[in-house]
Image (cartoon, rainbow, N blue to C red):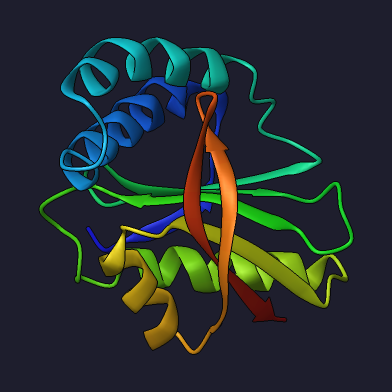
Length: 161
């Protein structure tokens, strides 16, 4: 079976939650406390995902090849949509799953009439920052965000659609 990118469905919710958590626990294990990753994040991610409606103003896509290998969320309720999350299953990064997800979500946003999209990445996530730069996106520099009530350093990327 080859990789398929498709709209997420409500029945994908649990698999997305598990992949999201696994990705955070792998990617940010040196930046976030073990307690946060093992205790706080699972509960918070379940709450956040339970609130997802999987329709406008959200664009939620999944990459599937025998199992769910990645997902992307974009919020379209602003002039330039925010690509809120893009995660690939740990262990299979660098196999074009993220590239397929990013290209597909950008095509979908363009088809909806948007000219630009934005994305913010934690400053410490060098792998993601390098990925977005390789994908031809411009790094607009440092900004701040909030992660579970704590201010964090991020990088902002802009995508021309």
